[in-house]
Amino acid sequence: MNPVIGLDVAKGESQVQAFLDKKQPYKKSFKVAHTLEGLASLLDFIREVEDVSGEQPPTVLESTGHYHTPIVQYFEASGYLLIIVNPLLSYRAKSSSLRKVKTDVIDANCIIKRT
Image (cartoon, rainbow, N blue to C red; front, side, top):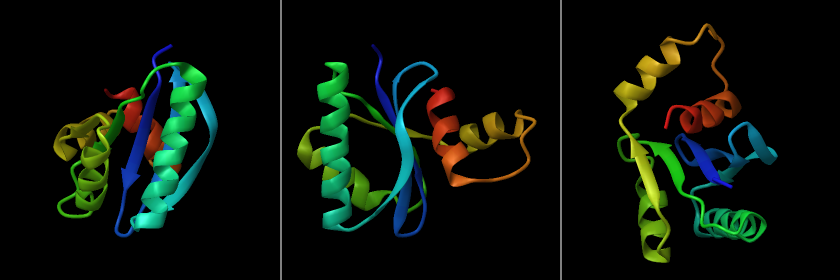
């Protein structure tokens, strides 16, 4: 398995989507707040994915100015791998898609597919 977790980061919250393997989503997408409680619940979810897959999943997110800072600080302190994607590259990959409707759930999925 190649588990991975994608975060679509916004002001104050992130949309989360996990995959156990390519094209194999794990549970439904959900939102977490950028608070200690919200990030702790995200860490619990990441550990759940780790238990199910047998591997520690990397977490992929876009660099969003300062919105992603609490996530990076929290997970670096916890020892988890974060992959931060340049938003210009991410935008180019999004615009190459025929999809014109923006939704956070689809964006969380797309972040993973582009890496």
